[in-house]
Amino acid sequence: MSDCPWGGLTVRIRESLARQDFFVSSSTDLSVLWEGESIDGAERRRRIMVFAAQYHWKVEIRTDGNSARFLVSPPSGLLARESLSRNHE
Image 1 (spheres, rainbow, N blue to C red):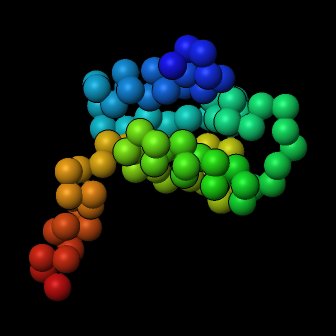
Image 2 (tube, one colour):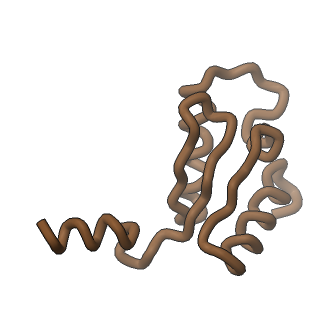
């Protein structure tokens, strides 16, 4: 992981998710995904989603793509509250 620009971010997210249910990343954390490039919010969001998908993390991203909350995806791929709401419909 250390040979890719986002290796450090990946390690920090994994370590945090091992201790708690989420990791909140700042724009500084996420900037490794577009280092040296000038991109808009839509492209930042797309890159964050692709990054999260590579590691099977669920992610909630701010509209401007400047911060995100990474979560462990349950085995079903659904968050517990989504499961619960579907069971009670």
